[in-house]
Amino acid sequence: MKIALIGYGKMGHIIEEVALSRGHEIVAVIDKDNQQDFTSDAFKTADVAIEFSAPAAACSNVRKAWEAGVPVVSGTTGWEKELEKLKSELPSNGKGLFWASNYSIGVNLFMKVNRYLAQLMNDYANYDVSMTEVHHIHKLDAPSGTAITLANDLLKAIDRKKEWVLGEAVKADELSIKAVREGEVPGIHTICYDSEVDTITITHSAKNRRGFAVGAVMAAEFLCGKTGFYGMDDLLEHK
Ligand SMILES: NC(=O)c1ccc[n+]([C@@H]2O[C@H](COP(=O)([O-])OP(=O)(O)OC[C@H]3O[C@@H](n4cnc5c(N)ncnc54)[C@H](OP(=O)(O)O)[C@@H]3O)[C@@H](O)[C@H]2O)c1
Image (cartoon, rainbow, N blue to C red; front, top):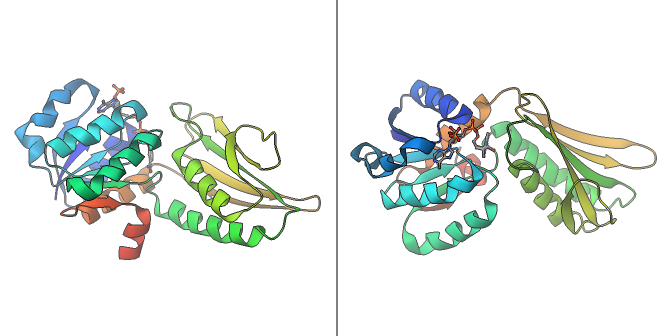
């Protein structure tokens, strides 16, 4: 498969390594300083683009790739509102987009555990639920896209929580998400149920970024030749 990379930072470099190791070819690399390459012949030959850039750049990157006729796997987080608009355009525009707040297979299994545990805990109002996420100091968005996905799943399942807030909860129906930024931590997400007598916690801790890159390349293999919107549930069902 011919892959174009959009965003050539930490993730872009690991995705390149993983894609080559799976027998794919990198036909174009677009970073902040060579935006003109979206209209290059090389970019247009790509079967799919993998986009890991910055929140302010993601939406326009997807549109530029679509203009060149290239479907996009995006992993950039922190632009979810614009993403909803792009998704709403997909049924009529014949383009392809895959987006996930977290491409790690382990995190997606953890998301399933989170949904299951939340359903159980909905009946036990003596437990308060909260979340903590820890990431490296370079991360631009807070809370993380993964934390938002986990929080939305909690809000769907736990009737006593109505909205998530960044920081301490002030009202009982708020779900607190604490975002900690330290060192080079690839990503830790912990959900904690706390009562007067005990505490139940579930944690996913990424050891490095490779798990995200493998998932993103698998998503590109899945998206190739398809139109419409897809996410990790589609990929995991397909496996
Ligand atoms: N979904 C997931 O599984 C997952 C996993 C890890 C990370 N992420 C997300 O992926 C994104 C990138 O992460 P990263 O760790 O690779 O960050 P990074 O190391 O900062 O790399 C981002 C790269 O994108 C470039 N860039 C900035 N504006 C651009 C534009 N308009 N067009 C093309 N490239 C542009 C940056 O260039 P400059 O350095 O010159 O600005 C940099 O090279 C972040 O949003 C992060 O939260 C998602």
